[in-house]
Amino acid sequence: MNLAVEETFLFDDFSEPQRASNGFQWQYISDTVMGGVSQGAARHGVLASRPALQLGGTVSLENNGGFIQVALDLGALGETVDASAARGIAVCLCGDGGSYAINLRTADTQRPWQSYRSRMDSTEEWKTHYLPFSDFIAHRIEKPLDRCRLRRIGLISIGDPGPARVAVSRLALYRDVPR
Image 1: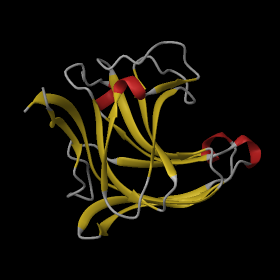
Image 2 (image 1 turned 60 degrees about the vertical axis):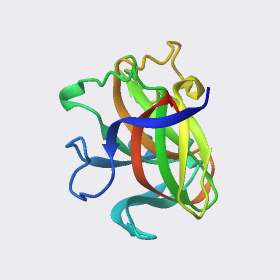
Image 3 (image 1 turned 60 degrees about the horizontal axis):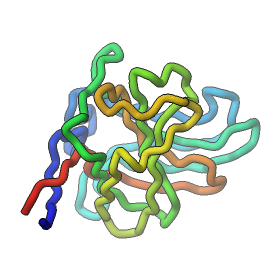
């Protein structure tokens, strides 16, 4: 049986710069919240004919730092999204050839350093990556990923010092369907 991919829930297509498709706003976060010195910024714009959110800056490991990120709350006041019907996250991005990650937080991630991550390499051309939930690795948390209680999603440059430049033009849940 051949399988195709179907999007089941759109987080953002970046067509509206003031808010995501789910009605919330993207936030830029760096390691400076914990004493690090990484610098960057996020901005909406058009890149290669696509509306996108662009993340750029310099990641530094000084002062126990090492990340820049854009993150989106999935519900108001900590409400969660049930992604149990989905297989994973579909993300269309392009960048500088570096490695980036999708960062998930759930109702179980109570500490700022806890998350679930799946890495992907960027290319200069737009490419859609399909990241199955089974590929997300727990970071500083013992509990397995509970995809029934997703609270926040982020695009992060972490652990690789130096310049970072990446853009995302679509972010959604996906599932496999028979063709």
